[in-house]
Image 1 (cartoon, rainbow, N blue to C red):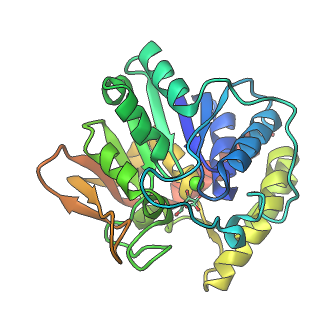
Image 2: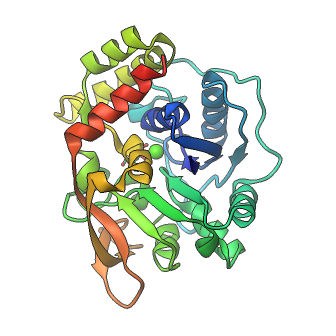
Length: 303
Ligand code: BDR
Ligand code: CA
């Protein structure tokens, strides 16, 4: 099994990614670390605990950064993910508790104890990962691979004409990760906008797998309303696609190139090809139909 650590800001597509990972027979989810992004970090932690409990898992949830490394705090996008992160669903109270370790402590320790075995999948602003790299000089070599949901290479941005939301919210952190020499795969808007789910898909999931599909269907209502408000039928599978890429990189066409992230000005958060540092893999295309079916099948089959 693949040992997977998801660094997350749940968040509706984050919830989709976490449930997918929990249900996939070949993934061993070793923990969740949380970060600000779609919601405040305390809310992200509460939602991660709710999802762990929902999935019947017994894994640590370690709380991470409350704000970007350098940029000032910002207003969370309640119009996309809801005031409490799960769309129109009211806030839920978990009965389990967050870990006593911080996200950086947990991340660096589990990587050190399992060298070359942990795949890290950051699907929010990448602040915790940058802090882990700073905190532990061996972290980027202890970790097997970092599969990032973030960035846009040839595609336009989604939060500005130039930037994807996760890279926009902490470009300084991404720059540290891109310069770290870690084995990095970037799953950005060039591929994540190719796979969408419609309201009917969520309803069918709710019928076939009431426990997981029902929860996702409830959350998805607001998410779909947001996409509709920007002229799109159906919502993107951003975060689940990064998890799928951890397990099935062969479903993605990648370019190997050094990358950088702009950290100031109107292009802040834009990810660009660069030189003078180790190349990373950037996904430019994907087998959208297979990815879509894999997501739906894993949720359905777990019922
Ligand atoms: C990314 O931004 C967040 O809103 C989503 O959860 C996803 O991680 C997409 O740009
Ligand atoms: Ca996310």
